Image 1 (cartoon, rainbow, N blue to C red):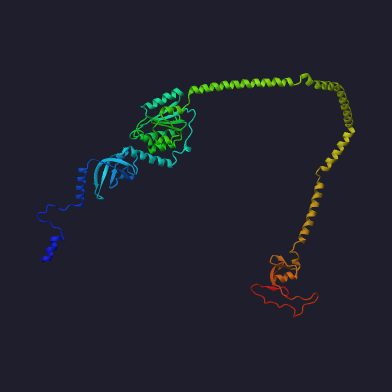
Image 2 (cartoon, rainbow, N blue to C red):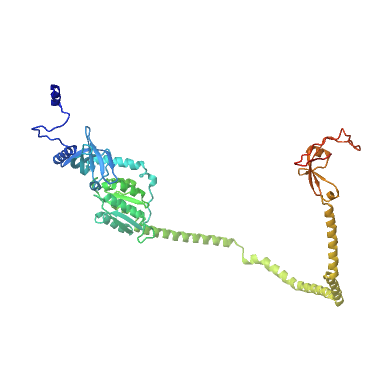
Length: 493
């Protein structure tokens, strides 16, 4: 072996071979990745990282994928579906959080990442930043617009309450409603803080909104969403987007009474009315029954006084009108006088009427003499005889009709244009027009001669003989040769 080959072999061989004393056997990529994965997981089995969420994505499987970053570094993170369902807030890009979990590697991409078990907001400042960001987003969609607010009913028959069934809130609401105006209350029990509280509150609000008016339970005329006071973390369920959208989309007027007077949640902005406390919400919901009764009593008294005052005024006006009206004797005296006059002329009028009737009866009876009646009967018999259908009249009428029909038939036959053709005449036609003159024949040039037994086509010549003289041989039009195919003839040949 040449020295050049030995020098090359000492710096790097072409083929890998095991060498004596070599205790570092080659590793596969998978083996090295597994060793790194075990080392990282053993060394960093539990870590807490503080960073800003970036590139957040929720997969269809429910897993969360994100990056945690600060000013100088970034690390990938994943949170499985079970841990994601326990989150108390909705992760978003730009929110600073503290993530608790363990580090691991992903051999498929030679990357390390943190598997997050728990994730919390990094302080109240981050929570307020998330709140302001969500508030701006929902306000941009118009969920807090004043024109969306619905007026509260004056006296609701049924009130739906969404709150915890074991807290002091429901007792305060029921007590205040009983003091002011007893009303039917439907309680939808929910969690008001912690895991799953936002979903339960949103489900309750939508459930009241979707109730049928003719169902087993009456549909509420008003809904109250209530909770006692607490920290911003305790009230965070009422800042969740799912709750705010459910409150904004509710078809029933809704009052938000979450926390104390100084506490404000996004649910308060979306509701139709905000109450500083649950007790104040009950006071807004119904009027005071005693005040209503007092008002009704006062209006009844005022109505009675108004009716009595109107009756008294009408009675006074009637008395004044009665004093101005004339007495019955004054009104009836002309009618009485006229009655006396009519009664005096009634007897003489009856006598004159009876005399006229007798005279008319005499004239009518004089016209009813037997001779006159027999004369009228004879004239009527004569008219009846003239109207009878005698056979000789029918025969005469039939003969007259036959004579008239023969006369019309002969006249019609004489008007038949084809009748003269049988006597040797011909009818000259140019298309569908009758040729009546020489000028029309010359203009047509081609004519059809109609005889009694058929038609013949003919061509019109241009020469014409003087009136009363026979045409000379030189003036006779030249006869065109006959076309055997058409058998056309010259009219003047």
